[in-house]
Each structure stands twice: as C-alpha cells, then as structure tokens.
Length: 223
Image 1 (cartoon, rainbow, N blue to C red):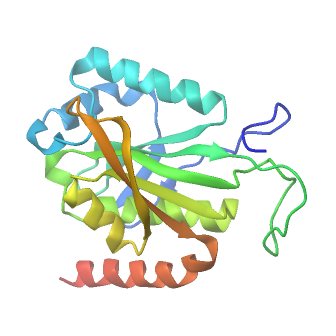
Image 2: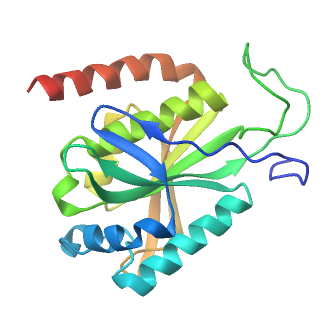
C-alpha cells in the first residue's frame, strides 16, 4: 500500500548548498524574485508551466506549501550564488511512504514512514539567464544526493513532455533510465494532450551516477 499514513512524520525541511547553487525552502518571501526570474524570456517555457505575474506566482507558491504541509512535496527556490539571485524553483515531489517489512538498505535511519521511500523530481524551471549554466545540473545533484543518501529512497522518477528535447537531454545526461512514454498522460503547458517520457534512477545506480555527475561539474568549472 502506498500513500502517506496518518502517523507518518514529515521529512525535515532543509537547505541544500553546493558550489554554485543553494536550494532554499520555497516561501512567499521570494515571490517577487520568482516573478522577475519568470519574466526574463518566457519563450523558453513552451513545454513547461511557469506562473506569469504576481497573482499566479502567489497561487503557485501557496499550492506548493499546502502540499508540503501534507508531506507530499518538498519545494525549493533556486538561488544562483554567482549572482545571489533567486532564478527559479524545483521540487522533490510525489513523496510516497511505504509500509510493511521489506529489505531496507543497510544503515537506514528511523522508523518506516519517517522519510519517503520513493520520490519524483519535478516542477523545475529557470530564468532564461540561468539556463545552460550548470545551475540545473547542480540543483539535480543536490536533490539526488539528499534523496538517496539522507532519505535512502529506492527510486527517483523524472518526467518530461516527450516534445521537450532540451529537458529530456538534461535528464538523460544525469544517467537516468528511460522507462517509456505514457501516451495522453496529461494536459500540456501549451494546452494540448501531452505524451510524457518517464525516467528513473535507482538507489543501486546512484553511487556510479554520482561520481559521473561530480566529474562533469568539475569539468564545467575548469572550462
């Protein structure tokens, strides 16, 4: 049985810091910064839902915080340390808490249900000026590291509109496995019926992928 039982303690919220990026708890305090980021060049959001204007952004943040209060999501504002600006948002989401005995990883901490068993990474968007800079790559590295090494999840799922070649290339660059395409999966950002490409990373795959990601970040810094 999946879902969040009533006795589950929600995972502690955290700030995740890297060399170029700091993922901060999403809050209404950064709404204006997010509006500025989202307004830089909206032509880059053809396949991604990004709030337009302050009212939409307030609703977006409030909805994320409501899901956080239910233990279903952990939303972040993305701060680019190079400019000290909030340049987007992302989430660990669709958190599932599995019940019952199973072979938990060695060293797993706490009681079953205190931390998620599986999660998605999604709702990621960046200001146009932060795209292609490594901000997205390190943001994913920070979330994957937290999910696999602190929560010790069994799987991370990532999804993209099948037409969004840029997002799919970024997911594939992480080393994620393409599970398949779900047809007519949801309403697209352009109000069409969207086919969605589903990707996953397993806990057993993470150590190798982590080293690969760290090496790519080091090469990007050296360049």
